[in-house]
Length: 252
Image 1 (cartoon, one colour):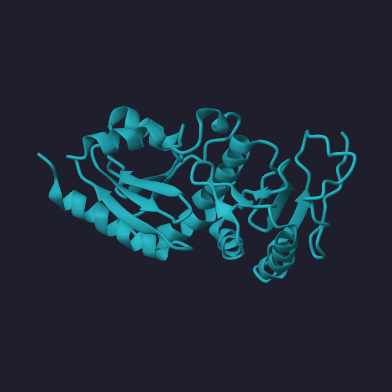
Image 2 (image 1 turned 180 degrees about the horizontal axis):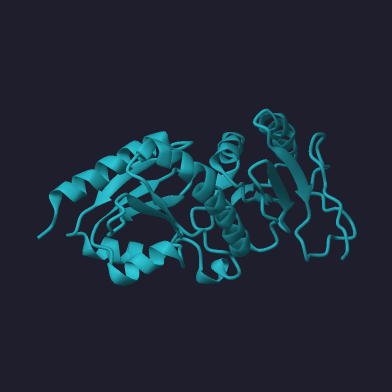
């Protein structure tokens, strides 16, 4: 028989945890009857350690799903032992192809105490940091040629069609990019700025530098790694705006 007390405890804990995490998170409870959703979620849990071991003995029967607007998700589940508390793990986005995850270290989940306020600090300082790095790397792999961004640095990469693409590490930078005309690809999570209007593109690049800098995020503009830059600059490519730094390529 299903334990309703456990279900209410899990759902309530997830609601509090979502409200305490940095940025904006919402929580939803997946009940035992949602068998298809739970099975699909189990396949996407990004863990090869503590949570994977738990699921091997206790297949997912219920869960709370925490979601961030940029597509990041965390799953909260019961620990199933005498220690109490919960387990939380990252969820791999289903919009990215399988090959995007190759050579990306799993942001393995962690155990949480019964205190959701202390747990929020633990998640923010540990799991989320590793998850955001892994997401940035997977999104980079999905597109190819775009250098991964960090939480304090956004790398903007020229594309052959004159557009500019980037994979910011968190949604602070994503919000600035979206507000200035970048469009996020729902499949890869990559943000892209069209090069159809080069004057408008150059103006946007000039504007986002100070906005990101105010958040403690630097910017860099580069050509795609592994691609040969054209011998003559195409007419569609505007000059590098002031405030954006082109990184130096160093040979090993």
